[in-house]
Length: 167
Image (cartoon, rainbow, N blue to C red):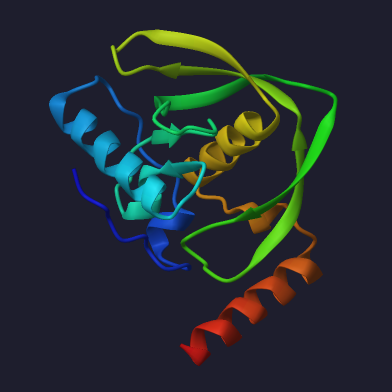
C-alpha cells in the first residue's frame, strides 16, 4: 500500500471519462488500497482513480467519523437522486488551496461493483452522498467547479493559478 501523488489540474486524465472495469482483480484491489492510503493521508472523504493518474472507473469513499469504513466502488452510477439538495464546501487535491460551495442532491442511490465483484445498489445521504457524487464526477472527466457559473469558475481557477505561482 502506498500514498500516491495526485495529478495537478488541468492534467488531461482529469478531463477524460475513465474506462469501465470488467472484473475485480488483485490489481484492482491493490489500486483501491493505494487510493484509501492516499485519501486518508490528504485527509479526504473520497478519491477517484483518475485523480492519481489511473484512468479506470474506480472510487473509494469514507465519510465515517472513525475512518476505516471505506466503500470500494467500480463503475459507480447514480440510479436515483433526491429532489432535496444540500450545499457543501468542496475541494480537490488536484487543485489545492481553493474550494467552492456546491449544491448537490442530499441523497442518491448508486449502483456499483463492490470489492467482491457483485453488483450492489446502495443509498447514500448527506456527506456520503456528496462525496460519492463528487467521485462520480471525477470518473466522468468533471471537477467540482464545473458546477459553478462560468464567472465563478474563472475566478476560482485564477485564484488557484495565483496560489500555484506563490509556491
